[in-house]
Structure formats: C-alpha cells, structure tokens
Amino acid sequence: MTRAIHARDQHCQYPGCDEPPGFGEIHHCLHWYKDHGPTSIEHGILLCWHHHDLIHARNITITRTRGRWHFHDQHGRPIEPTRRNELPQRE
Image 1 (spheres, rainbow, N blue to C red):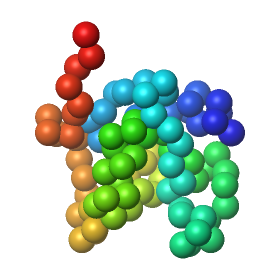
Image 2 (image 1 turned 180 degrees about the horizontal axis):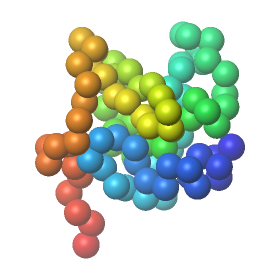
Image 3 (image 1 turned 90 degrees about the vertical axis):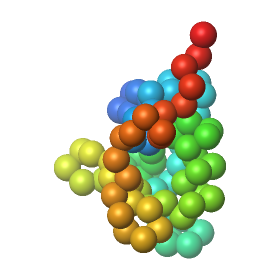
C-alpha cells in the first residue's frame, strides 16, 4: 500500500508542499480509531513529517473528491496553497 500511495501522490499533498516521499509518511484521512476508517490506498495520503504533525495538532480534515485532496481547518474553511504553507527549501 505504501508504494502505491507514494506512486500516486509523489510528494507531500499538503497545499503548497512538495517534500518527496523520503521526508514523510502515510496518514489515514479517516482515523481508524475514531471514524472506523479502513486501512486502504484510497484513504491513505502522503504527508511530510511537518504537515502530518500539523494535521493532528490543528484538527485538519482531509477528504478526496474526483482524484483531488481537499484540506479544511477545524472550522470547515478550505486550506489553499500559500507561501506560508511551504517548507524552507533544502540545499
């Protein structure tokens, strides 16, 4: 499943981030312990470590519609790419 998600997502899917798979991990967009979400390719998303922590800390919701990931803050507002979302460039 991990290889399939890496192949599909290719980089961190948080808006504005392009960290490669080696700097991240798979997140269950349906929390298996809270929402009874199954472990599946469909519900897995590649996030860098920074944004994976941020998703949990800020209670961000992630959904997938028509092949696109959508991120919403805890108040339901969409999160769009901005310069602030981006991580510093690696040298």
